Length: 182
Image 1 (cartoon, rainbow, N blue to C red):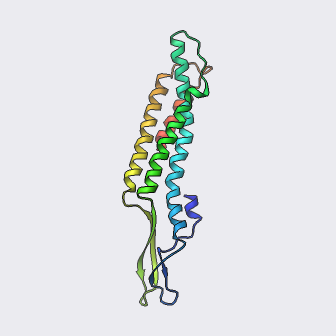
Image 2 (cartoon, helix red, strand yellow):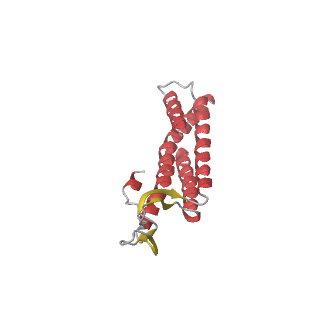
């Protein structure tokens, strides 16, 4: 929400300076406000994907080590073995957000609530609105919750590994806290 707060919000159409009434002339600066509206879901989605995929990849690495240990095999886990998790999470989040941006982006809308006797606005309310943006929001939240649930399952499966070899209990707590915040 910080980028949004750094933008001076205005009406979608210019105001007549003499009468205070909204005209039919589009406001040339409203694009900045619309962009700030869409920055909030982009920051949330990509921020979650970056932070969580790193934890998720670490849990997957612990699981791969655990499985190799059960089979009495020696296995070296490389970054390539878990990088697909980060790429997949970022790709899915990016796809949902890009679809949202192209199909029904948030747009700033300010509505006059109260006028004075001469028609000058005394009070107005503004918000970011989208025609079908709630579907995209639900899609991104469902994807994040599914990832969190799967990470909790993986954390539970690797809970008995000694902390000297893997910090599985710490990872489980990190995922639990993310799940609570979500």
